[in-house]
Structure formats: C-alpha cells, structure tokens
Length: 140
Image (tube, rainbow, N blue to C red; front, side, top):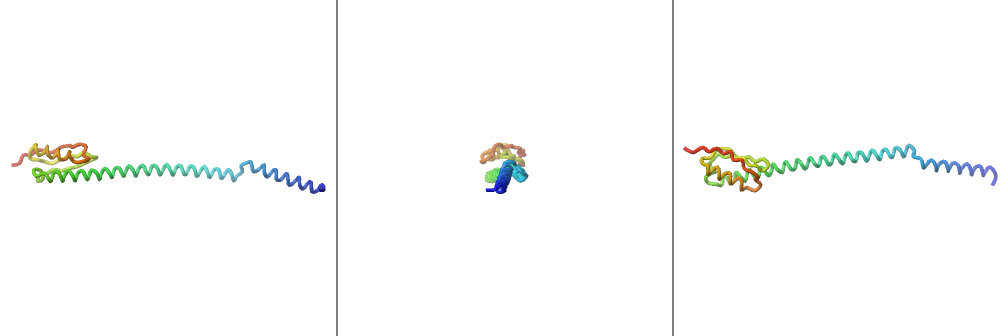
C-alpha cells in the first residue's frame, strides 16, 4: 500500500469515527422525537382524565335518572294501593315521591283513613319514609 492509500484509509477511518461519535449525541431529530413523545404522553393523560370525568358525570346522571324512575314507580304503586282501598279511592289524596320519601297531601274524612293511607304508602317497596300531610275534613 502506498502513502496515498494509507492517507485515504486514515481519512475514511476518521470520518467513520466522527460519524459514530456523533450518533451517541442527541441531535435535533432525537430531541424533537423526545418532545413529541412527551407531548403525546401529556395529551394521552389529559384525554384519559377527561374521559374519566365524563364517565363519572354519565354515571351520576344515570343514577339521578334511575332515582327518578324508581320514584315514579313508587308513586304509581302508592296511588294504586290507595285507589284499591275502598274507603280511600274516592278521596282527594296526592302522592309525591322524592328519593324514596313519599309525601301524602290532600284531605280525608277521618283519622283512620289518614292512618290507612300512611300505612299503605309505607308498605310499598322502596319507600324510606312517609310524610303524611293529609288534612282531616269530616264529611257532611
């Protein structure tokens, strides 16, 4: 090998060495890639947090709707029980239910009818409490 070939070999070796050494240092592409990865991770976390919050809201709304449906069902059952009772079906009794608490309002002609309406409402499944606001107005 002559001197020129040796210089070429040394030059090529030096270029390879510098090139390999440069690969160990993060360049603009690696920095940009790392920043993109961080941005994607942050976006993913934010999306996951938002999805969790949305899911919580949906569950909460579903629970509220479920309570509303149960309350309507309780009200219907209480009204049916009152209407089925011979001494009460002709009386003016209103039934409202909120979160399992039944409120009876209107008028009855005797304390016994008031107590019967209260007992019928309390016997319905799902009723937690009965507020008896029935007014006794004796019949003529």
